[in-house]
Image (cartoon, rainbow over all chains, first blue to last red; front, side):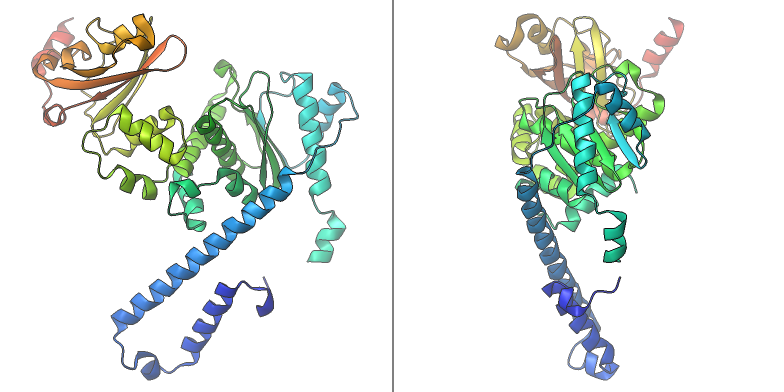
Length: 133
Length: 267
């Protein structure tokens, strides 16, 4: 993946700068006034803090997405239960953990159909994917 | 990686250090799985995914802990069984194929470790000397799980010498031993009249369900009368009682009773 440095979160920029500084430094400079053990400890503590910050940011972003998604309403199914069953059975890349399609009530099958449509509407089209890449 | 390890690596990825920060809906959305609640017919949850997006529908149980476990279970399927179709969370367990049962077990393990990760659970139980149902309830509240899910998790964590077992009027439904409990201890098929669980099943929640008693009320082994165990019980599903048996350390160290074996072989 090729992210420009501007796109990266703060903690990643900080880590990049630290690694770059250590990479360009001579061994003598890097070890000056320090023993190897304390340097390892320092590196580990920097990494731990960076991971914690990244984890906290990831959770904050997930919560933001959650509140955005929970306000969305699902559309109305414009087909019969039989049509919904055959449509769902024909979907490629389908993950379905439920009772068998033929055993689910019509109401539940139509609800799954609405979900499938909502997922398809939310997915980027092939053109959008290509554009993004 | 095993299901439990996958789940715990997710918790680690979010740098979660406190059980109250395990926001299972937010973790799900991060994985591309949206959660919604809707009453379903004949099953407790469904999962529908297309590509890398999914919607999990949870039939509300009225118990937040149970609903969280269902979300974790569906997230387990989404993480481990993407692109497959199979039976899940149906009330009629007889319809499951062997492969479906394996997937269900994996999803349960994933959910259990996601909601009760070892790194957070071990420190939480560190101060408990002899596990009681009261401790289990407090832990379940702290981790926002059901009492039963916590009882399973703690038993398998192997910190305490306990057996978790379920009985109905027809006899033993199932049991789960902490790995440290020797397999030589054989639970009785039918509840003994001397057990608190028997009283509980007969009289309902008004009876006292906790106390010490002779191990011979619970175990078939001929040397069981030498030991005293602690028994606690709570109602489980309708017509069933869940008992937590706390074994003394002598029962863990006791060697196989060969006289008992001779008697069994003769019969």
